[in-house]
Amino acid sequence: MKDAVELLKALIKTPSFSGDEDKTADIIGSYLSSKEVKYSRYENNIISIHPGFKKERPTIMLNSHHDTVKVSKGWTKDPFGAENIGDVLYGLGSNDAGGCLVSLIDAYLNFYEKDLPFNLILAATAEEENFGPNGLASVLSGRLPKIDMGIIGEPTSLECGVAEKGLMVCDGVTHGKAGHAARKTGINAIYLAMKDVQFIKDLEMERVSPFLGPVTFQVTQIDAGYQHNVIPDSCKYVIDIRINELYSNKEILELLQQYLKADVTPRSMKWNSKGISLNHPLVKGSQAIGLKTFGSPTLSDQMNCNFPTIKLGPGESPRSHTPDEYIKLSEIKAGIDTYIRLLNELKMMEL
Image 1 (cartoon, rainbow, N blue to C red):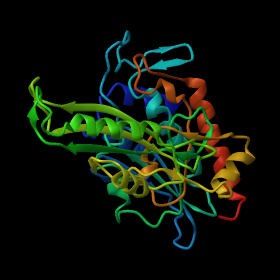
Image 2: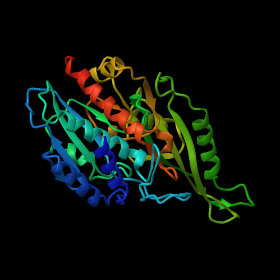
Image 3: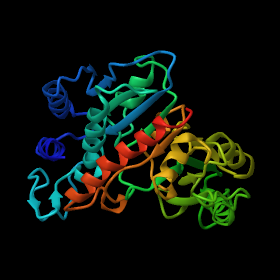
Image 4: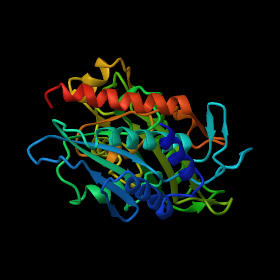
């Protein structure tokens, strides 16, 4: 554990905003080399494949990210200081997701020279926080062997995330007809948008997830008009939609396009919700070692995986992206132990 903490301190001290993680990639690569672990580097993604890899065996990916958000206002400590007070280690990215990353690396090292009934791939990846093109998605595009399942390291209080809400942001535009405000001429695009907003406010989808709850819709921005005496001929608004694993983004978009008066355009269709069967070995193994299951409202690199994954890691999600972010050293110790126990449990299961 001591080496894992020192690695985390080095990562905290090195700024690694999304898209600019080259120096932390250097640190992770050097650390693996110091442990005589072979790795490859693609952009700022560090990949290591267990030396006992056999094509006929199932493959498990251990993934977490080393990029961070930018520094927010309100910090009272140096975000790059890696200040350690008792059990607490402060610093940007310490909780999200540095503690998870170094715990996964330590667990991977524990199995590196051991014979396993499955393959392990360690992926320390970039650009998770900004959903960038050069992160995990780029690595999964033909640069790795077939992956059968994965553990995504994110702060979950060491509970097993079996579902993750998707996100779709849509731009709506209603089209009216300009006219003089003093006369009853024209068609007010704001009034058309008001009907849409009311429809969205009242909209309830039938399928409710036991882990993620219902699909939620919120109109978060609205803009129309350029002069007080002109009836606006267009009104723009934005819908933030959080989608459970029982619907696809495509289904939700088609419903909105059918019933709303606005032209509705999604900014992206790729952030679909993710879910895993409760009978999957990753879930069964987590339950066997005493982990609780839950549904996560936040996005992660799970969205880039076209294979079953769970979200699991030390730290607490509400600390992420907050001033004076921290992780406890005891949480890192528990994270390493949990990852090792889970992988040992999976050794005894049919994958």
